[in-house]
Image (cartoon, rainbow, N blue to C red):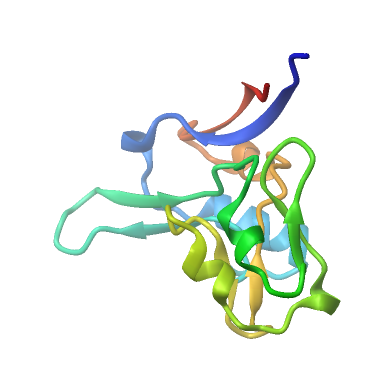
Length: 140
């Protein structure tokens, strides 16, 4: 059976201008915060290189390392890829962050818990240079 899901993807990394609009949209939508601290993706400038940015966004793994590393089951695989968080089960250990090989799972430093991507696409809507896209992915 073929299962198709839409997941967030970085499709034109070289077009990123580091404006932070994607992070601002994510923080505002999911945490009702004006700022970038609670975004489920991160954009950072490469030190010493003008105009080069690192973009870290959830890959939407079907068997996520971060969920397997969670000792309490606070992070569980999300239907369609990625993970969902049950904050009441989180012990704030950070093992999920350590387990994420691409360093895509973000951490909320004030609440001491992970910030999983919902793959909702709000960040895509606010990216002025079409760096991000919701892409159909075959998950068979």
